[in-house]
Image (cartoon, rainbow, N blue to C red; front, side):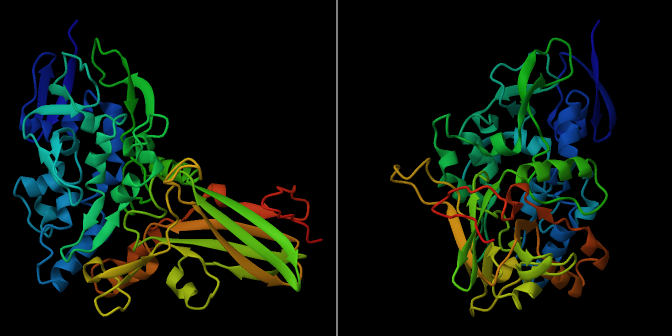
Length: 452
């Protein structure tokens, strides 16, 4: 018995039997993929790729940027957040996305799977074939597919070329020439970009984990190594959106294995020295990365005796901006990037930024110190506590975007204040460390945790 797949096209319902092939207009609608690729579609539908043109922060920043630059921003934001809408000539600045068909918003199936070449390193330099062929990482696609199919190393996450497809959109240079986002450049300088399979970790291998399964739910398709299209990072939808709780769990899982945190407590003259060692073990790029100037990552450290706090730093309340704490907490260890305008003053919006200084945790560059490319990825800070402590706790927090920036967008009238409470705040599980006098001696670098 022949099997039929339901394809949803722009103009309505289209039934296509095996052997028939969808045309370009049909292929551009993600819902056309849903019938044969339900799990991939479901995962993508909850991703930040699908959400890219709906995100209230993107819409607010773009609106403010267009206004404050008198339109000079042009398609800078929307070329990545709704690339098909730009390429189909339906928007030039992203201010009219409400009138753009849904299937052309966000980063769609067609936009990635129709790429035939990468013609640069940043700002979405992807060249589409503009045909009806969907490219992927399978070298022998099944002949009964509902669309023309072809293999491309750009979509094969086992190949280093695949990172050029992802990375060239996740490296961003502003119209004034400032290198705003550098995830791809950071990865290229890392251990994970080495082309030996023992070391190579492409973007897809981290953000699109694999499993054995069916690429398409049609007769005759063999088991393959397929990969997730949820693509978790650190951002999360702040409005009702499909799969948001699944995304939350995936993001937490990824963050829990990103850093390694080591806590060392020693008795010294007059008190206790607490040493914190943070290593970016698994990000594949610096930490934090992406829109680093917007991220807020920081260490929380507490020391107590008899249940009473004797020292603390990085204690940020829910709903409190990290920058507010930074003004009064001289010990705050914040990881990220500080941005400045042409006059050297702090810059808040990306179109104002001319320079920056980084406090990111570096990505590993080599397996060990014997390699000439090795750069020590450990970042260490010490804190002195007068007196004695019998309990020390640490953890690293991450907010995808600072509440100070959100407040600025609210104050300018570009973002509704009701969204403020929806922004997530993550704790990285591998950095949650507790020391007490009974903690076993790790004998690390001569550090003996004995402060009884």
